[in-house]
Amino acid sequence: MKINSRFLGTTAATCVLGLSASPRSSAAVSDEDFNALKNVVQQLQQAHDQDQQQIQKLQQQLGDTQTQVQKTDAAVQAQSSSTIRNALHNFTMVGDAEVQYAKTFGGATDPNGNPHRNGFLLADFAPIFLYRANDNVLFEAGFDMMLNNGSVSGHENSSSTSVGISFAQLDYVMNDYMTFVGGYMLLPLGTYSERAAGMLNKIPDDPLGREFLPGAGAGAQLRGAFAIGDSGQMITYSVYGANGPSSIDNTALAGSLDLGGNVGLLSDGSTGNLHSAPSGGGRIGWFIPWGGAHKDLEIGISGQSGVWDDAGDHYWSAGVLDASLHIGPSFELKGEFINSWFGTTDAGTVHPWAVWAQAGYKLAGLNLDLPVISDVELIGRYDKESNGQGTSTRRYTFGYVYYLTNTLLFEGDYEWLHSNDLNVPANQLIFQLSYGF
Amino acid sequence: MKTIRCFSNIVIRPAGRLILAAALLGGLAATLLAAEPAAAAKKTGPAKKKLTGSELYAINCNRCHQERYPTEFNSAQWQTLITHMRVRANLPAKQAKEILKYLKEEAGG
Image (cartoon, rainbow over all chains, first blue to last red; front, side, top):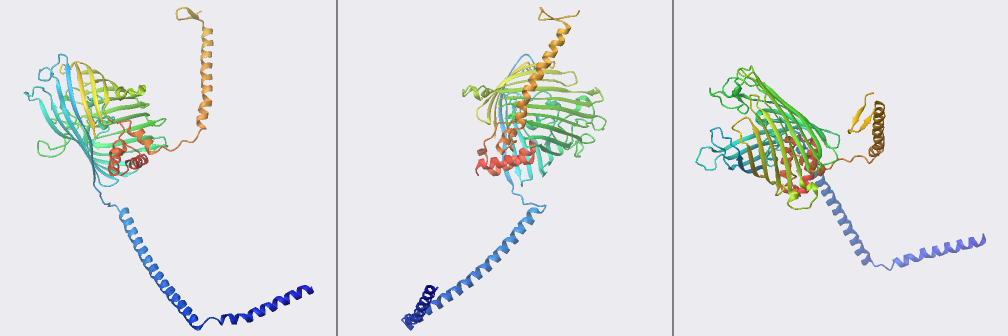
């Protein structure tokens, strides 16, 4: 204890001496140095005050800017949520073009009694104009400009050039499940009419039986799809009202049915169509993929019905079953079963019908690794039709598609025709160069 | 006793038919049972992943036409084309959006 007391006493004494010595050390700073230091401190203080003022000023400006941005955002949001949206008017053109050559065989003659000839049958340019106003509004119009040259010599009046509208429709995407379509629409009777561009058809000629159905019609349509799960499976639907088939001369004779002449200016100067009421129709389809891409099945059923004569006494109706199957990237099988019925005053109820089935196999599936062979797809089709008035035709087609590129196709087919219509040639060889753009 | 003559020289009696039918059914059942574990294994396998835009593109577009390369059109053109194809091919909205996203990314401009 004594030792600790002495130690504490010694320490305290040292501190006292230290404190008493320090004034002497500070006394060594001159007044001049002190004032200079004081000035420096004052200048620093002033600079600090100025910085503080600048910071406050900048904070004020930042606040004003943020307020302005919020106001602008609110205005933009209000504008985008309003029913009227700005249109951007994006324009894109797609379509296809074809050149076709045909050689006919057999003793059949054309409707004028002349033998069928060989040569370049047609040159076709079919652009589709797409105008997109915004994400929900699209106007699309498809044209078909065709030089159809039925005579090689050029000395007969059988060649023609035509310009026509295939479709011209306004699409309004109402929500995720429904789109409104209005105008001159491709009709979803089966799937062929909506997938009939030259580059999509692997055979130049349309299947038999498609002439029993209207390809397009003026009217309005609701269509859409519902996805089932996450596998890509879906249910699709289309419901429409269209002018429908009409009579070419107001009568209900079997030969007066006009599937395409359903709108326009009538001979008496009024507008409309030569029948009393529009037709209604629709299609429902089921698309089932399995195992990813290139393995899928699509089946559909569609129909249309409505009066076709001016008096409104006779109905024209149609029903179509369609199916399409892909097994791997190389094999495709598709077809349609077409039935139509129409009442007449001279032939009772006429029942045209047709069936067609088409299969294709891409030789790339053989894995031969041969550059030309691997770009070929072999195609075959069987189609048969009866017009319900005594004429029936069967046809067997076999051919190929050579893919020069993914959009440039060179097709060649041989058709064996069997018909009790003398105007139908016996057999045909057709080549077609088809380009999609 | 009625008999069935197959392949011209093999005779099967009614009792034999029953045995043959039972054997066929047994074989079929065995085949199905043998296939069952594989099917069960598939069911308990990894959960199905959501299809990507490129997979949906291949599934939906290739069934009607050859695939178009994403670089054939720019982003704005793809936007228009997908709206067109959504209507024409009845594509579900979510699938159309996924396909468009893929095409825009690959188009690169």
